[in-house]
Image (cartoon, rainbow, N blue to C red; front, side, top):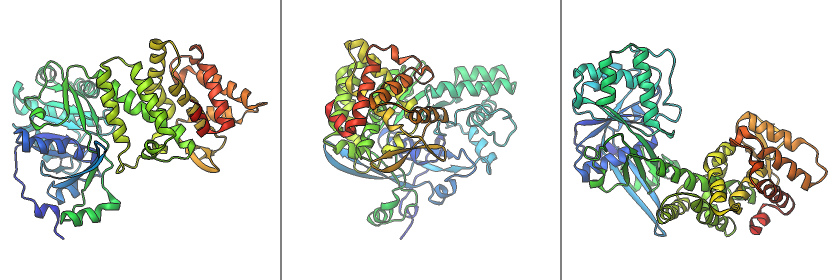
Length: 492
């Protein structure tokens, strides 16, 4: 069977995007979008990837001449959908650790306009000791600073040769943070004031929010898919149908240069993305955290099973539409439409999303994702939201364990062990609480509820001061421990 690159004719376009990151997400998100922009939006540009780490997928990508296939699968309007696209928007991949001169020479490309990245949440960080003459710098911002300085000098500070940076890392204000660290290096390296001014006036570091579930290489089905396609593709990249990219620019949008509107892809350009970020965190991520710990203790294992469950799904739907959304500001209809899309995505039979994977670090997740909705509902409605309150009790019940396995605390579900993973401080506190002696279940529930809710280092405030919450959580815990999780869910 021929390789995919041998079956596809590929035109070379000007390299207009330098992309730090060659992994599954960017290939099924940004490069997929660019491929459509070339086809429908008149973009006429290629992506040159840069491998952020010494070891990566660069050789494999170059071995296929940058060509690969995306496999989009999901449910739309209640029906399964499967879409294949051969991506030809990638020129290739550079490893700056072995090809530094080739990497830095990209700064001299007059057609280059964008830098896009996904170097993981830890990528946008300062590394002490990075220097301008390193080949390359350790940190991603250090590489960007050196690259932009080379470009500044190559074009004598020309204003029209500035760069639009759109990082996709999942941290708040990713563009602002990238620029901050780039400037820190520029000042530390004592680069001239003209370069700093060029960074401020000719370049734009946009904040962005990305939303698409990308499982990546469909290992179990790869052979069948390749047989159906009629070619071998070692870079198959599976993703869900849904896509959203929110890009927050400073001063002006860049939609004229990245014509996403003409291509019909779901990209929103804005001067304030806070609503979209809040919407995603509290509706999509918040529903996950609200639902999965209780669901796991009933015996379920995946998000899809939760959506199919006649017990868990009504609870999740009620919590989402009757508690989370009413707690939020914004257009109710728009929020409900997004929530409907989220539930449809959760039902995607092609996405195996394990509840235990989502359970990682649930204490900090609850604080960020669900506590604002719980307190917001109380402020607006004057009463505690039952499902969100119950989900906090379910979290406490999920963390029950007295022994460790490695760095994880061991929990028990129907006689089988599961691993509870969180920070050492969180796990040790729960271990201590559950190791104590209590005269009865009611005393245990009251004591643990009070101790957990009063921990200001976890929640940022003393939740025992929230009227009625301590008593409600203690009551839910007692029901969970005496009647079982399934019966407790039925009662709410």
